[in-house]
Length: 218
Image (cartoon, rainbow, N blue to C red; front, side, top):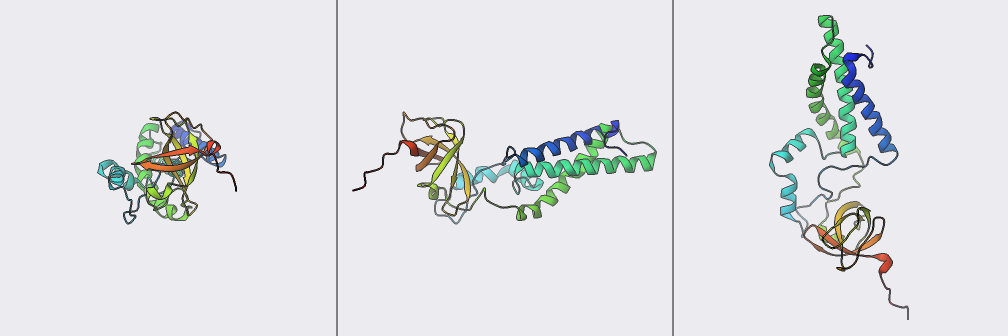
C-alpha cells in the first residue's frame, strides 16, 4: 500500500506536515509553547491564584489536560499526533482493503484515524513529557524574577504595549513574561537586554541595560 495513493491523501499530507515541523524544530523556528509561559507554585509566597485559576480552570483546561497538551511543547505534541495519524490511517486503510476489498473514502479514513490518534497521542506524550528537558518552566514565584536580566524576543515594548521577554530565574531556567518600559517615554526594541525592576500583576517593567548609567568607581 502506497502512501501516495489517492485514498491515502490525508495521511500523505499529514506525513509531509510532520517532516516540515521536524525541520522547523531542527533549525530553531519551531520552539512554540502552549498555554501559559510560567508554571505557578501554590507554595510560593507570591503565588498569583487568580492567574493560575484562569490558566487551568474550566472545560477548556480540562480538555487540554485530557489531550496531553501542556505536558510537552506544542510542536512536539503536533509531531507525535501527525505521526500517529499517518500510521493509524494507513493501518485502517490496509485493514479495510483486506476486509472489504477496497479502502475507505479518504475523508472517512481520516475521521477514523483522527479519532484514534487523539487518545493515542495523549497517552504517549504523558511519559514523553517526563523525559524532555523542563527548561521553559519553573515553579517559582513571579516576584522572584524582579532584578533578573531578560531579552525582548518578540515585538517592541512601550508604555501600554508590552513585549514578550525571555528572562532566566536564579536557577538558570527560562521564563517568558510580558514587559513594559519602566520610564513612560522609553521604548525597548526586540533583541535589547533589559533589567526587570518591578512587577504589577502579570506585567513586568524594565529598563534597557544599554541606557543604565553606572556610578563611577571611586
